[in-house]
Image (cartoon, rainbow, N blue to C red):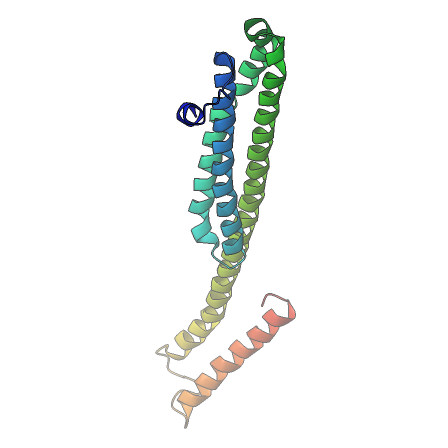
Amino acid sequence: MFEVNTLLDKSNLGEHGGDLFFAMMKKMYRSIDHELEFIRHDIAVIEEHIFAGHEIRMVSAISRSARDLLNLRQVIEPHREILHEFETGGGRLFGEGFVPRLRALSDEYYRVHNHVMRQTESLHELRETNNALLTTKQNETMKTFTIMAFLTFPLSLIASIFSTDAQHEPIVGSPYDFWIIIGLMLGVAFLMYLYFKRKHWL
């Protein structure tokens, strides 16, 4: 800014260090706006991937964006008290004409702070949604495994019964005994399937 103003023969930085401080703070808050734009884009991508079925991959992406927002909050949180104190004492230091600039800086701070908080809330909602979808998917997987185990248990029991070395074995030894046992097992499995369907477990 000094170089540009020297080349253009201007003195836009003002008469004292307060004007330079004002210009530096405005520049810093604009850079935070650029950071928030990147985070906003990341949150939009995260939302798209969450509803595309990539919940597991999005856990680390959400954590990274949450870390970036937390870093921004830690950087700007102390500004509130400093700007408030500077607003009351800056007039005595740099003159009453500088007070509107200090108020403008406070407004800039609250604008940036509100943007950070809004993005934090959005990310929090996305994290809750992602966790809910992950839990639902895990519950569906566990339900499928439970039903498979429940189906295979009676079939294993039937196979064990017919493989028992007993003196009198029904069906075993008769013509087509293998196909009769297979048909019996399939019939039991089909009846259990109908029962699960009726109970809305499938």
